[in-house]
Image 1 (cartoon, rainbow over the protein chains, first blue to last red):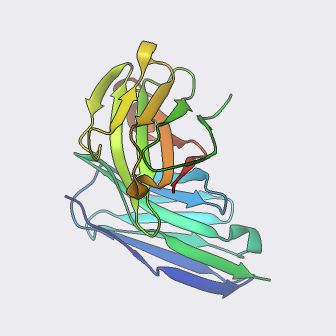
Image 2: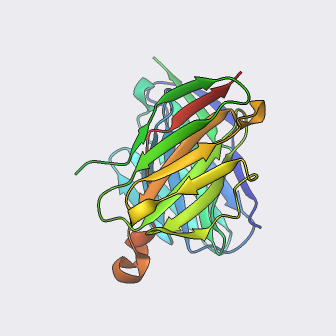
Length: 107
Length: 119
């Protein structure tokens, strides 16, 4: 069974700061997802990646398969980025989720 | 294109009552998943449908939970009788068939969730 660890668990930053959220997993995977859950509950898929790096607007996701590690970066953070960011890895037994990183961006 | 929808958005019931949650996947998505997030814990997989068949129901907590997907379209998740520990947010997600769409088929689209409170 894959163990998914996210860090930090909670992060408070000022508007404009560069944000990094990390995800490590224990067993090889076929893909990794970064998800965003806003207050109010809905989940949005931000990225799905299996290698390298993806960029979407101010969001960047990277993955290092050899090191079993992924990072989610937010550039020029904004209060509307405040949410829970969840890492989920796809293995032989489906998706395994991390506990999430609760991000608060203060104006 | 409409996304994944779930109904109701919130449900408050008493212990021992029955509740049925509904999920409408994105049209054409054969794969439908149910997940649950209990307060303070990570999201946990419940089960996976491929069309109308249960592909994997290893995450269903016990026989008080019954999921159906008649006709391979929408799905229902019934909890009967509900217990206090069933409280949480129930998410549904859908995806295409990876055998025909490659890696893109693994991308799951999540619904807004149903917040269930059992008192």
